[in-house]
Image (cartoon, rainbow, N blue to C red):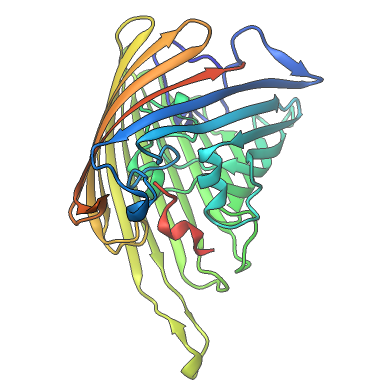
Amino acid sequence: MALAVGAQTPASLAPATTPVPAPAAPTWHIGPMQISGFIDGYAAYNVNRPSEEANNRVNGLYAFNDKTNQFDLSAIKLTLNHEPAPVGAHLDLLYGRTDEIMNGSAGADNMKYVEQAFFSLKPTKARGLELDLGKFVSSAGAEVVESKDNWNYSRSLLFAYAVPYFHFGLRSSLPASKTETVGVQVVNGWNNITRSNGGVTVGLTSAYVKPKYTWNVNYYTGPENPDSQKGYRNLIDTTLLLTPTAKFNAYINYDYGQSRDSITGSGKNTTGDNLLKQWQGVAFAARQQVTTKAAVAGRFEYYNDSQGLTTGQAQQVKEFTATGEYKWPQGLLARIEYRRDASSVDFFAKGTLSSNQRRGCLRCHSPTGSPPPYWLAAD
């Protein structure tokens, strides 16, 4: 999958009915399945120099590229895809640190080494309706799992902590008009294949696409406490993508979430409480295509985890990221990045603790066609 050298839109902001662009020639097939993939590796340096004893040498509040002061393999991905006509299938096999965090955070039944695996149905006379059944990445968020499809190499705080990574269940998408696509999802909660509480999470999605902007809205609600259908988790995620020219893009992403604990048992065996915990954040990002091969991008965000539900400690965090990109021949994309994180409390490891973290990253991947959020392991 070669990246476009013109304007680049994060994959998660594309309308649900827009097919993923086909890989550049040559294209490989196994029977009806189209094959593509990539390799993603990086080298990172954190001026705090966190130690093994402090936090296992990771960048605090990072997702997927969290290992620091060393080289690491972020992801090797192999994709098999057959567009629904009217029946299709999609399989993403994933190996590396990305898989360890994405599938290892919430239990052993998360289909390890599988990012997505679903069947699709698109009836010819159903006005564009598409149904997918299986494991698929979440519609929430302005960024996606694959770093090459984002503007920055490191994922945002909102992607890492405010929204889910994936779901298992049924999703639908239907063009409501020439400019809007809506969808409904019925899934087994956040970041898990099976549920312990028997409840389902419902997701509502909308993508409104115009030539100069795209507005995405996602809402998820459902029980997320283990062994109980009491206490719902709710998430509102919205992103406004601005595309004023072919070379300049920008977006604003806002997330608000809340989760209510549950009370189980009775009498002396009562456990838990009924407290409401909340988190919210906003991100601003922009990308400029400088030449046909070079681009620059920047991101600033603020994240408030007021009760410490998602990060494990009550805090307000700010981060700024600047990324330079150069597209080499033969499908090699290289990026160099500077990022600074600052917390309202002593959170980042530096021998003892520090409230700031600065880090650089050099990364590249070649296409062939922070630890996970504290609370994602709850169910």
